[in-house]
Length: 160
View (cartoon, one colour):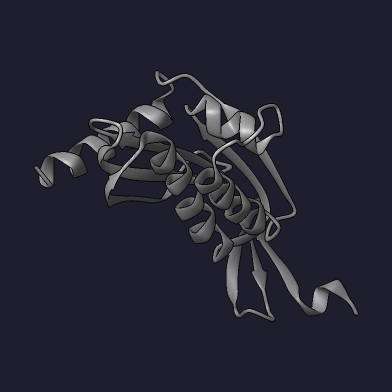
């Protein structure tokens, strides 16, 4: 199989996949956040996606109902990877302020709760759709996280 039969380079950030009939990003940066008021309590999650030129290509926010902050953090990652799976098969850089989620995903922490293990398994399954995923914990003060946190809080305010 000749690679040129399936891919055409558009520019350094986007390639055209002839087989799928659409452009796909070669690399995406994803910022995620989850929030729960009360823990457990009303919860929301959000993500922001940028390309390698730091241009925003997507963002979304979801109301999750009554759940914990950890479930909200994992839900943000799952929803972001689900979206990204439709837009790239390339590299993903995923940033979260959830130390627990990132350390569990990277294997630094064990997962003791079955409901978190199920979410972890879903994350790992989605990660297989990409050529490589880099997981990074960043502080809440990171601009990408601040943006996602604002989306979560606005969504929670709408559901009060």
